[in-house]
Image (cartoon, rainbow, N blue to C red):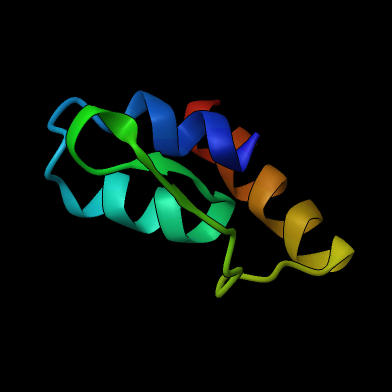
Length: 62
């Protein structure tokens, strides 16, 4: 789900979100996507964090 949120908010290839996502999840980058960047997770979520985030999102949209 978090990866989907990053992808949905990455309309500009040079945006902070795209750079954050490539470091969090890894993937191809650079000119013609020739460079493989390994995932270097810096945002870790525990199960109770995920539950709290879901509750906050539900509250926001209700």
